[in-house]
Amino acid sequence: ILPYYPKLFDNVYTKVESQTKRALDTKQMNTLLHTDIEKLPKEMQCALAYFLLMFLFRGMPFIDLAHLRKQDVKGKYIVYSRHKTGRQITVRIPKEAMKLIEKFKNMNYDSIYLFPILDKKNAAKEQSQKNGKIKKDKELYMNYLRVLRNFNLKLEKIATLLLPDVKLSSYTPRHTWATLAFHAGVNIGIICKALGHSSIKVTETYLKPFENEKVDIANDELIISVVAHNGEKEVA
Image (cartoon, rainbow, N blue to C red; front, side, top):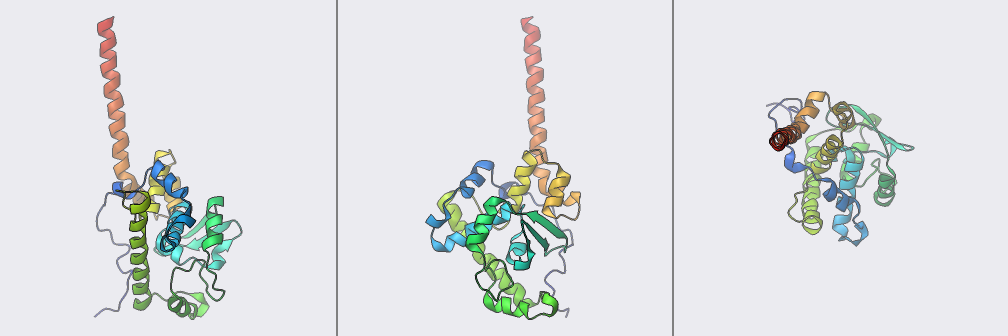
């Protein structure tokens, strides 16, 4: 029997999954960004703050947010390594994010983590590793999955309260950032770099559904122009 290794198949391609329903539109994201967090039930406040930070940090995955260390903050920047690929990412901290960091940062002086997402037992065990390296054993991985599940349950409650009929999950901030950037005309190469993807092909898979939308719009515009041209000839 092979030893437990949670990331054994991380780099194995399985399928292309449509991301269309995972992203929020500009109005929906604006609603969340302008929500008065302090007026929410306490159990939802941290969840919404983490959700917004993931978006503001260029679609940062939840696992990377959870493992951000205090030492990763370098002045106005956060410099960290992606949990999935090990690729180093540098993110400038927007002023909107700075306020959230100050309010929801980890107040435990002994913790290495920037946010109190992982439990104390988990943090103590990880801190005990040589050179500050995180040991990805089964216990730590299963604990992270419990934290992730709890985060998603809270996001469901937030959606019910603030965005009825909209599904929120830990994937939503990342896909929303990519989608809104794409529709804003940001070059796909820039989006790829911002998300920390290993190649543009990965980013293209993310955005493939929206390429079809652009093609459909172009087709509609072409048909309208042809029909209008025909009408002008008849009038003449």
